[in-house]
Length: 171
Figure 1 (cartoon, helix red, strand yellow):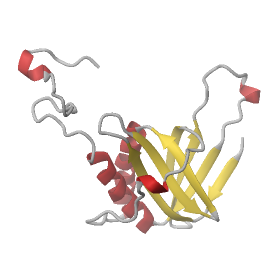
Figure 2 (cartoon, helix red, strand yellow):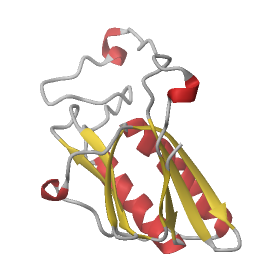
Figure 3 (tube, helix red, strand yellow):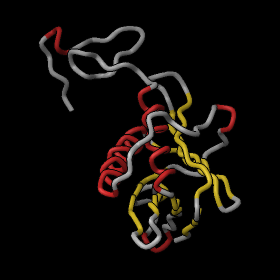
Figure 4 (spheres, rainbow, N blue to C red):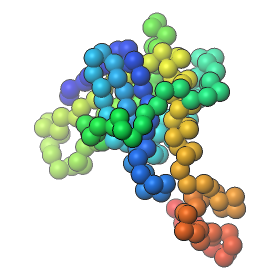
C-alpha cells in the first residue's frame, strides 16, 4: 500500500466547483515539493470539520474569526483520486495534527491482495488546522440555503417543503 507524506503541509484548503446543489468538492494541499488535488464528498468535509473542532477544543486551540487561504477555480487541477476514507489524529510529541486520506476502492472487484490503496498523510500545525477548519466551513456554507422550517437544502427553482404539506422526509 503506497503511503505519501506531506510533512509538513505548506498550504491546505477545500474547494467547491459548480452550482449549488451540483457542486464537486476537492481537498487541495501543497508541501514537500508536491501539490495534491483529491476529490471528496461534501459529507466527508462536514464530518472532518466537526471532528477538527472537537480535537481543537481538546488541545485548547481557538478557531480564527476569518478564513485564511483557500483556492479559486482557476487553481484546481484534475484530481489524482477520490477519497474513500479520512482519518485524523494528534501527535503529542510533535504537537501536530495528522490527516490521513485513503483512496476509494472499487469494492470487491479485485482480490484483497491486489487491491493497492493509496494513502497520504498531511501533517498540519495547530494554526493550519484552525485556518483550514474555518476555510472549509466557509466553502460548505456557500451552497444552497437551508429551509427554516424543515432544515433541508432549498433549490433556487423552489423547495417542496415536507413541513408545509404534512409529509416527513424519509432517510
